[in-house]
Length: 77
Image 1 (cartoon, rainbow, N blue to C red):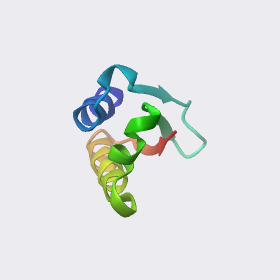
Image 2: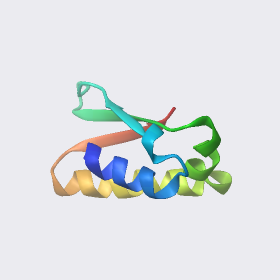
Image 3: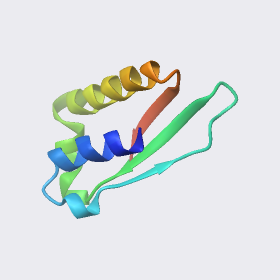
């Protein structure tokens, strides 16, 4: 799952070397929270207008997690 998020983010940003993902331990309900870190200048590219790109990233991650019987959440830091 982490690799999928990194691949998506690197395709969107101008500085792919600054893309970093951290995963929290699963919570009581089994949800794993992924924290996506990008360069300050690339934040707008990852979030998109009115958060559309961020929502799309979350949808893709949730559907991939569902295939693996997991629960995930993505936070953009």
